[in-house]
Image (cartoon, rainbow over all chains, first blue to last red; front, side, top):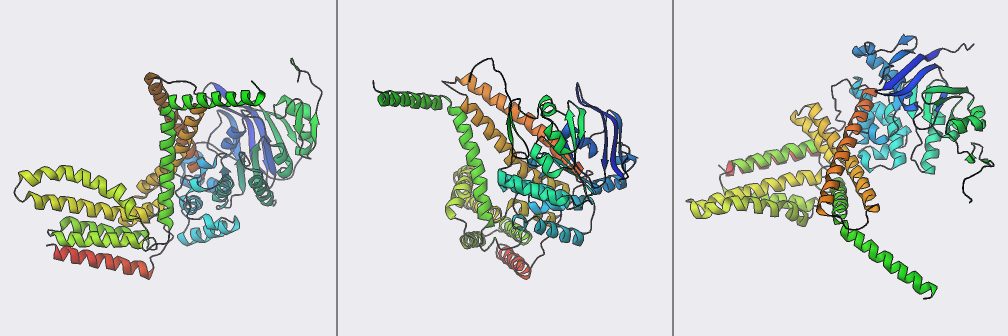
Length: 269
Length: 277
């Protein structure tokens, strides 16, 4: 039994998009200071789960607790509760174009603090600190549509971290990035896991799971198929094949090893 | 036929087929061309607004208020020469700010002349002192349009929007304009991708009806994608604390030179108003 406090506790969480069941009875405990990777193929429910954790969606049935308090639409009717939660939990969306909706990088990073009614001087000081820390000060007056993919991602992460949330949720942080930008983002994410902040990353990138995570939750069609040490999970090729995370015959492991299994085709090649 | 000749003939056939497809899908080509042109125009305008000219160095609020004062002075002037003086000053400011007069002529002067000229021309022959009235109409519209162009050409659009807050335009309106501007580019990208994808799969001639069908289908898909995008953006806003109320932050402070330039604008506008009575 773990002595570490739970940040999130999910019990039998179900979520339906009209006719489609996205999450089907999820039980999950996310501990304080842990680095969790939600691994799964497209359509496995990773993004929906992140949105549930960020209280953007509420479960069709089941419960989600944040530090023991159940997240419900009623709780978020109060500005005080909403601001407290938004200050403590931040979500980086998969597409930076969704996340970067302000006219300039400066406005983007200042958006969260402005909404939470911080003082002007505090906002200016914090935004400038974050711009320097993420090495994006030279982009401050640039409109987001003129940034490269890697720059957009860094700005998107900075726009969430400006609030210094205790929980950081990231949806496919390395998707559609070139290798250089990808490694910059992985280094950045690795530096965030200082034990103080809880990180939850949704991805189908096995390398990222091993590089960043200390716990892995494997999702399959809205259910938890397995959970445990990421290194052990990526070694289980049968399981990964079953949940469509690796090719049946050929796949590369985080260690760089490429496996090729015997196989048959209806045609020759 | 030897292998090289065969290959050349094959290449020629491919080229002809490609040309034919290109001619046939002129509608798609034109759409892509105009989308690229729009994005290119916006990029050029942004670069020009960010360059280090006379007006570009000024705070957007001082420019916005100063130019509005001059526009009011021109509108209320009852003499032609003060208007001409403001026009000359506007041309001098454009030159000092690295704004090419050709760009102003093409995008502002010619359309303004054609539009107001068409309205004013009949009055020259029909009304007493019609020539003078026409001169007022044309000179005022040309000068005001030139002043507005100076503001737009020398100020990045996000900075211009923020400057509107100095005129007490509500924050929510400024935020909406800002987001509209920002997402125009995303939607342009989506539209270009759609058209390029269509081009890569279009072979042979397209009839008029087929072109109209593609245009309608593309518009529908684009609308649906924009609605989806807007939903996602709203979630991203909620996630960062948005509660239905918008706030903006003006991080720049007016410097002495901004106050000086505002005073110069105001003084010049007062002189024009005085002489124009």
